[in-house]
Image (cartoon, rainbow, N blue to C red):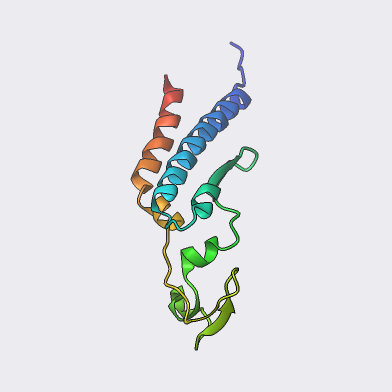
Length: 134
């Protein structure tokens, strides 16, 4: 009897299943974040996307919109965990108006998109691995 080592083939199939699962999970979380994000101009909503890094077996869901972090965590006196600037500040709008603000409350959309779908995420990943069993 000869021993045949199939461990590399099994490892490749596990990685493929994990990647399929990560893509499905990323699509789910991305679509939920798009539904939850507050919309003013639509720029933030339209910038939400995902990337799956196959070599790291990781998925990244987010945005490159420069103000996204302020929407997610709030600003000034309303920032989460009291991390914002205190006492307010003056700023100029793009059309030249001068305004005063104490900041804005957080309006989380990325974290809830993940947290609200944790069971579905576990189920998706389990199904992708279960498919290997035939």
